[in-house]
Image 1: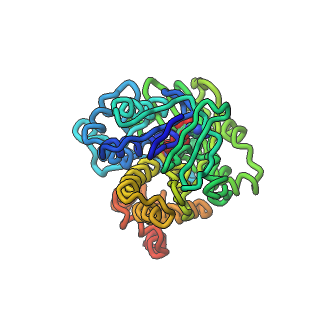
Image 2 (image 1 turned 60 degrees about the horizontal axis):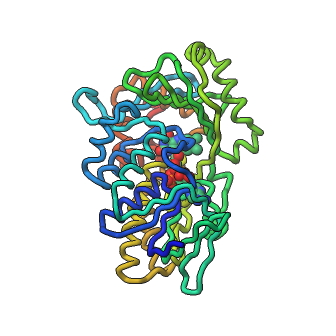
Image 3 (image 1 turned 90 degrees about the horizontal axis):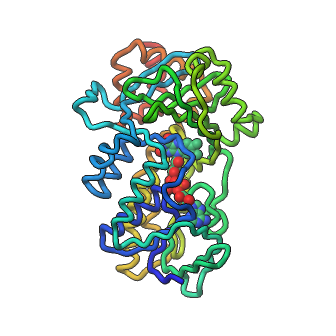
Length: 413
Ligand SMILES: Cc1cc2nc3c(=O)[nH]c(=O)nc-3n(C[C@H](O)[C@H](O)[C@H](O)COP(=O)(O)OP(=O)(O)OC[C@H]3O[C@@H](n4cnc5c(N)ncnc54)[C@H](O)[C@@H]3O)c2cc1C
């Protein structure tokens, strides 16, 4: 039986980040996960510049520490978009980047390694009590609003004044207590496989997003990893999967076996392990992220970018704000839903603008001809390529993608 002010459920990037920020403030927490680390998580394994920023916010030396972990990560300098028309548009994360001099804009690292990197930081902190191998299945609210949690066997019981729920896309708490439903228009299904020996990977580890005509609005990715591995996968909106009756695994293998370019590149490649699937709750709709005595963090609060499928950084950002709110709750001894609203506000202040934009860009996939035009023009037009490259760091510039005039000028200039 554990009695604690703050219990964090789930020790992925969202939960671990929350616990680490609380520890930095000198606040103790109980962090529980059903897995024992290192553990796998089905993911594309791409860590954006926002993840690097969040590492820095946990502690200034963390990005440097992670950059030294060369056996488990590769730095990535950009994205190759392959348009439905077959045009390759290469967009560096930083214009005119110099790999020998610049700090990498992003990384690719298997989640078994990245998440464990964070857990190693957790293990260093005496303020955090980490319990592994505890699958929490029961949540009971007490008269004073606090929660009692327990696992199926009743071996572990926890009483917590404040529950921070960071247990991912399949969180039972999210569905049954917070009342957030899975909506096919705002949910994506993804598959991930590890291959060894894929040919033609970029020398600067650009990630590849392929938008094939016969697989829209879904996409196919190839992300280079250390030691000759690549993370290969597909993602598609759940509503499109049902309406088009798509079998994701069949489609993924079909593309690898029959697409002329992929056929060549995968000719000598070997699938290592199984092809595995998992859900991506998208942040394309605002939800209520808190209530009396609880907050939802990361995938449990559906915060994944609807265009790129990026969710690690948003889990870490929401974890940072959850720690801030938890500290205010303790100070004021106020755990009410009304007081907790400040958390929702902080998260959406930071993320809503970009989530809304990504929702617009996601809709671009319904207009493959427009996508083709943008790709075609950008490969020939240096200024446009530069603009798109800068869009990764400049949200106001990304706003332009929302305006019809952007496409009008593009098509007719
Ligand atoms: C196919 C696919 C590809 C993706 N690609 C990318 C990508 O390339 N880049 C990117 O940024 N994002 C990507 N994402 C999204 C990313 O994986 C998630 O957004 C991210 O993992 C969210 O972190 P989290 O901490 O909220 O949840 P998670 O990482 O899911 O962590 C949740 C933790 O809770 C634990 N847990 C679950 N249930 C219980 C329970 N009952 N009791 C105790 N513990 C429990 C789990 O063991 C786990 O450790 C992808 C997702 C998928 C499915």
